[in-house]
Length: 427
Image 1: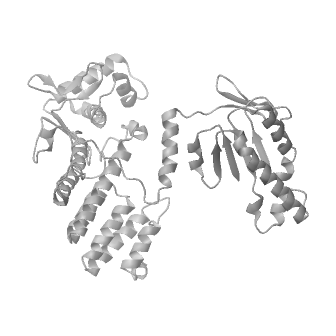
Image 2: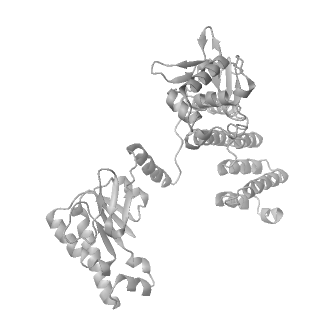
Image 3: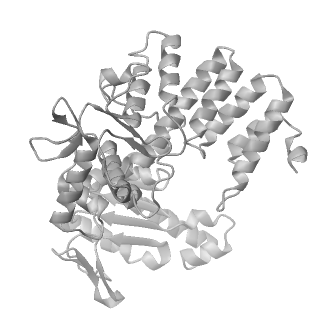
């Protein structure tokens, strides 16, 4: 079908550019609608049919008779109303529909949207809650469709170079508190805590580590205790966690800022924040050449020890389901490994390129681009046994997918190119 939007944001046309058009006023849309109605009437007469439905059932090109809908967010003028009514009188024959804001004489249906956000259409039996996307989410959804239309894809935004204090970026640096997210979850702290309380305290510390800008106690409470908790229990747990993390020179490692938000002090090293800072320094505007860039990328990937928060308590961390952490970590780790693998391969270091791809796959195991990087690097070694082993790994990984147990088409085509006999050997 075709849809014409009047008075809506122009970005909505990105949802389906070949089928959706957006105009500011009905005056812009009416000539096209009237022209289409005339063309449809002429086509019906030529075909000897009495309706578009009949034409679609008989014609070889049924798409030529596709319906067209006009949806208006603003009321039409009186002249526009008259022209719309004229068009609507032939709607059964022309496969067209019109949804118009405001009262319109001759309308077949009247839908009411109340101030309480209800949509009511009594004759159709509808009484439902109208859905509304907040402005930020609306813009994000539109951006998703814009990005999907980019032939070369969309590059990730650069991470913040100041994600971790400079002192934490010195090779071999150790801080009083060390938190590991990029692999088995771990917290190394100077204080003491009862073994039975470690799991809960660790989740609190991990949540704060994942939100370095600080979180309000109420936000923390909702994340850690989604089914509710008393203020007394929460405060006692936070006090134990703070004692466990300890302090340096009298300054606690778990602090509250002037707005009451809880956050970790600069004496706490979080591998994810260090990773982000090192990856940022590898950007062309910061790195002094490809060797410097590769060095920072390699140091960043050295922080990856396995799957994100591997080994975490399965009964906890429910907040991960609605948090951006897993997506951001996986995307940046995969992007970093891909960049380093490409640099190593361009420098003729096929083994280094394979190692970079494997380092990223420790965390981003399902990233097809990294698997293709690994395949390309294995092919560059010139060793067929190495390439066949990697092809076997890729095939085994694809078979693990319970939803779609096959590799991406791009990956299959790459293997067809570099190892044409792979299908018979895998079978």
